[in-house]
Length: 160
Image (cartoon, rainbow, N blue to C red; front, side):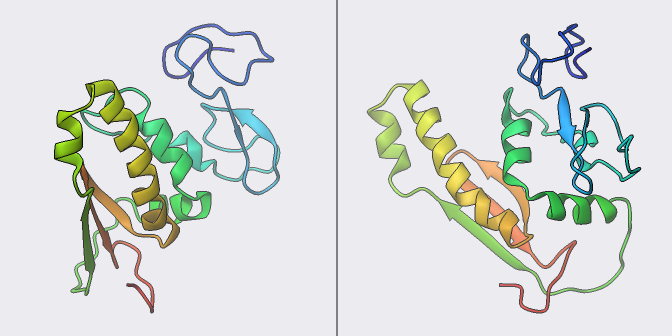
């Protein structure tokens, strides 16, 4: 099986690429069939496979896209992908969330950069998960801060 990311040829029973760690299979959300990671549609039931859409994160370090894909609920990813390319000219009320980690600058001065990255990765996992759980949009990760918004492109009656 050929890795869709790096092109490394792996044994058919491998679930992850031994060269770069990319998942080689994806599970169909409708029927549960395990399809190749590069398939756009399930070969068993014909459903669209949301994981086939690559998550592009400009300038992000290796592994960031994969971590974000683990945090995004599958149903939300499918709804979000369905809105891709649709221009909606309407006014909406949106809620903007800006959150940063208090004391992170002082902490960073006393730790090695690797330790700071490990701590911040854990903090981002905690801060990002509720954004996607409530179908918000992560706009930006900035140093020790998260910028997100709710109400667009998917709006709810009770958005925060």
